[in-house]
Length: 438
Image (cartoon, rainbow, N blue to C red; front, side):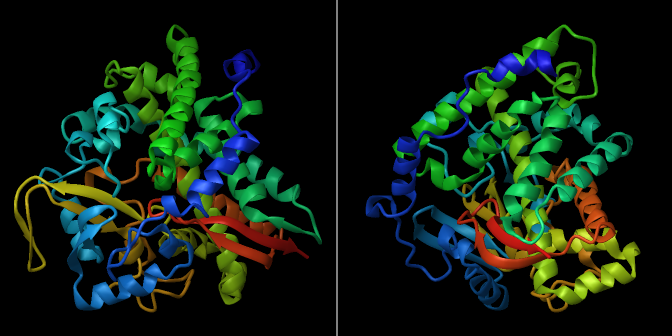
């Protein structure tokens, strides 16, 4: 990979102090950057995810109106879909409830007119049939069972390397030293990305997944600049492999796939963003949830130590419990009645996975972590239907290996400092889990 290192030479994938200061101002103390969420069931406020108060709101919705519409919010009018049954119903009808970028896309935040014109955000997950199927088939070979077998040794090697390097007897942030390090490294391996520049992937992922970073013209301009930077770097790697023989890395697979058509620069950048966010943010936040959860529910750690055969099921339970992707959006293409409510053509429909994975009609004591939960696999954290997460097997492999090695190496993270959650309505997780290994 050394011959690729020049691809990112000079790329400042860290914000300058002045830019970071401006960003903090926009996201924090600047009153002009704040929006008003005055409706009780408007859950588009990122702060409600940061302090977890959204759970109580979702509980009310599931009990009183599992399908309900809020109007006049900072994100416009939208439907809240809050239970597993209704989410699976919507996802099973992709021609009625569309994901296409030109029809509304797959996140609660509407794209700007400029972004629509330029095609920013036009990823295969934000496409409908038949284009969605073609592009998905070009990526799928990178996540087959055989490919997971090929990667499993490297996943374990990296997991052991990271865990054995952790400091003992001093506090550190598990998110940075374990979750980010493992998932960023894994993505670098999948892409065959220059190893010494792998943390650029984390930087780019954070800028794509935080919807607040498109909430003003200034932030949108900065995000666009960073996205273009990412696209140019990935395109250079693409060009390097265009005339090379097929290889098992994801870029090479895409290049040599008969299903992948020519993409313009914006679509290429958008799809690279999707693959980076999907591989980095989601698994990393579940890894952080493992450390926090095993501390908070210490009896569950004891179950895993007594019976390691529970670990595969525990992986599903941690994914349910964390729910790293909080929502997906669909847009109705015709009038449709769902659970007694009439959704009109053109309406924005938000599938709240974070709520559905606490659905009391499906999960007994849903706010408890239970590594031996019999129906943990019924979670919808990976989505459902044609848009189900294509990288689910890789996420499961990484999480299973992490738990196995934590048990084998007797790694016991004890929360001794701050636990800070992301203020993010799309990616659900942690910015900080401060722990100490005794």
